[in-house]
Length: 400
Ligand code: NAP
Ligand code: MG
Image (cartoon, rainbow, N blue to C red; front, side):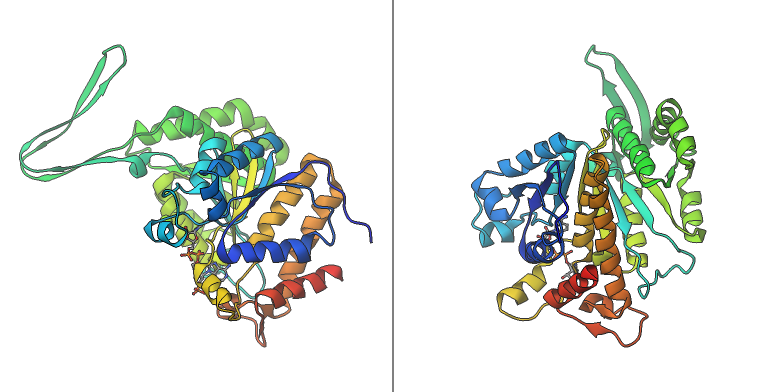
């Protein structure tokens, strides 16, 4: 059997711990036997990040801008324990944060749906993709504990010395204060990423804020989305047969619960933080959640939504059997291969991505799965496989 050829490389970002083990197994068993895989490899494993003073992370992000498609393995974000464990020169920032800052993108998280793992919400028939704005608001706030009676003011001083001042509140006793900000540029990028991704997925886009209460701040978000849509995407959406829908956040929440799914839900930073955990847990498992970072210029970086599964890795190191779910990591690869196929008009490559996804899902549907899914499945007579057995079962299916 001849292998599928590739013209442009995918940027490959290797990572840490158990997901690094999965990475190798997936490549060797599910991709390389079928595809003449072309990647530009960057080792984002913590040891190599330390050796390069984290330059490798920056380089991998710049390569993604150059080639347009990347696939990333989960990586450790170092904390004090990790600095000791890996004897690091310093406590490096989160690679995802570094990459996101360079690509200026938005993260879209989508649950992988499969028969036998049913969402808690009965009427959700299709996945709901959550897009979270990842800049500003309460995550970059400034807070003051007000000690006593006094006046709180909001003051902006322009570079030209212009002052805009408003009284926030005349405190009659102690209280609390919070200052938040966002930037037109960041909101604009967020809007572009959302519209681009909706077109790419051919899915409706929902967006919601609380602009009835926040008549300047949230209203700006709505205004930017409306303007970008009117000026750049309205016709493209009509052609693609999809819609952009704006509503209030409380109305959106109510509608999401009653919906059938199958749309993209764009959320402000805090709403996205809260709602993504609700949506992902209701769909089943973090190990069945993919994640893609989309830049406003249409550059794509695919990964799993979960971390490096540290606990399983320590078992693996001790020689114990693990049953780690590779599905989200497989789908990161298929996402990247399919996108590469689309960009290069390489139908065979995109078709292979579809087939690998099908083989993965049908393996689960046939009752063969990893331990995390065996615990929550509605299927009967399931076989719990270990990490490697499960990947080999998928391979057997794929070969068929
Ligand atoms: P984690 O890797 O998400 O795993 C937490 C727990 O969730 C696991 O112990 C396991 O539960 C379950 N789980 C997650 N993925 C699974 C899978 N594929 N198959 C089976 N079970 C799975 O979080 P963590 O272990 O707390 O974090 C480890 C490292 O990941 C941290 O250093 C963190 O910085 C990093 N991280 C990276 C990313 C990223 O690169 N995108 C995202 C998040 C975290 P049981 O132990 O109960 O089986
Ligand atoms: Mg959260």
